[in-house]
Length: 308
Length: 282
Image 1 (spheres, rainbow over the protein chains, first blue to last red):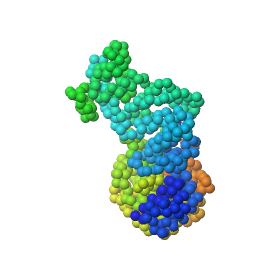
Image 2: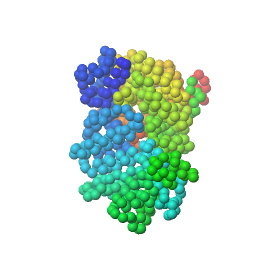
Image 3: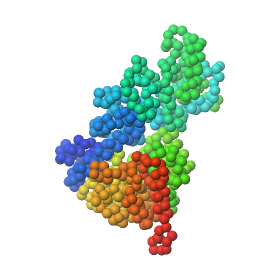
Image 4: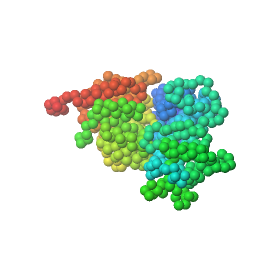
């Protein structure tokens, strides 16, 4: 175990500056947790301080750059400010091993760190919190296996029913999966994001009176996540598309949520059109109703429905 | 020793931001090296896009996460995923670094030097054996750049490297830029280092360019290849049956034409007529 303890201590010296100082200064609190031989201790204490500091600095900055590489808009807004806090980032988010790609792990950590600093007023502008949240959703949907599986499930369902007729549509069951997400934002990201993507940092961004809802959809095989602005009624349709209710029942549920009485014919038609549009975007799948409407949706059943 | 392996030529480290240019220059790039860690836990569609590259290039998985020097057996889950990636890419070999990058508590995520002792040697040999019993393709180990050297070792880096390769049967992925960078920062003759390691085990070579940071030459993979590194490459090619030379350029990308020029120059060097040891020129 001795060499492993030496590697543990060395690794921590490279990733924890406070520990590095304590260890090299001979603080027993830093050395006692490790079972080191005299030769190992002498070797670690014999490390060139300047070179060790450089290697640790390179490592800290590479962690930050790796994360920012996955968050280009966050980087545009906060890159230099975050570099001023790289030591705090390393202290508060030590590089604990995780079974995920390093870029994703570090980007997730940096998102959390940036939000923490924005909320305490250490970073600005405050509206960058929305940008961080926006890129975090993009990162998650574009890299996660769950989003990929969800996209594949929706595609499979929609391949099974090519073009639902107006007669069939009310009886079909709309399904959502982990490839779709609606997120509220408190600044006009629909307007801000294209400007940020062009490298512009807008000034005087104000908070919206009501949240703006953006729909994010991961489609099978696509590199980029599709994004679109939606209204509350569309969000309600998606929320009601729980894989149990039919389209007709979803419309009724949305009507019930918005007040007494059924949807007016134009409103009902608008809801049906929107569900078809969401299907075209890969946000929902449509499947035939199973015998027991209360049955939980499962992929095998969907597959059977397609083949039947 | 590695005679059966295919001669791949001159290649490029695959970087997604350069995908379009890389595909457009497929005729000039003989193979791609991929960072295996980026695909081991990736969603299936990302792996599908990677495998689509096989239609245009041979692929070589190159990792940073095996941590072959850590005094813990390699993670079986990591090895299973790596084995699957090597198989799916149809790679003639795969590689990682002669270093450690993690401990049970810390993912250092940076190539960290080993202490050059008999105990470290035993650990590396044990771990390499674990890898090679689980993955069929030949395994190469790469020499690293490092800035902080652990004092008090029992042998030199060259001796340590030699013994690892000879005792495990692994091939050498020789990064000549790393040799150059270390020779500047640590103060040794790079040619003496090269002559002290078993160059005949070299299957693949890495070239790259670094820059000075904080008074040290740093292996940033962001600059043109230094002329001294080209000379070292020629020196090795004159002495070793190298199958592949790869350019690493990870950031600070120039016009893609300059990258292609580097690949072309490496290929020209590989194909240059050179004397056959003990015989007439080829």
